[in-house]
View (cartoon, rainbow, N blue to C red):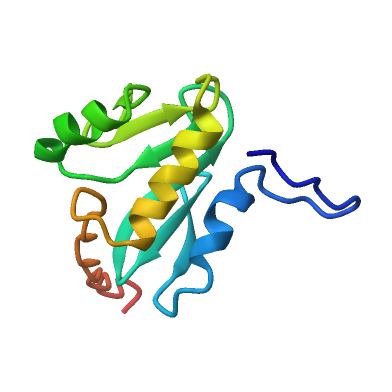
Length: 133
């Protein structure tokens, strides 16, 4: 699969073509996280698209550790991320990056139970008492 050309004059994330098939889903949300773009479906964090330097140059597969063996058996290019080993990582440098990343997006669209984590609820900060009294 070839990456579509990027329009001139507008900075486009180089992995945008991967999350575009998810945009049609009414539950799709894209958020910035750690300098990456995180894709959510049904409120679950599914994939993170990283476009920086290694080890942040590829796709993070957000999943539970007990799901790693099944995903790695199907996608040999996946390995635990060097900094976030709770998630699997597909480096952009992998020979099969485009085809594997596309297949992972298709799994996310189908709500494959091996993909996705439910984010922890945000803890609200208690405001500090005003010491200027």
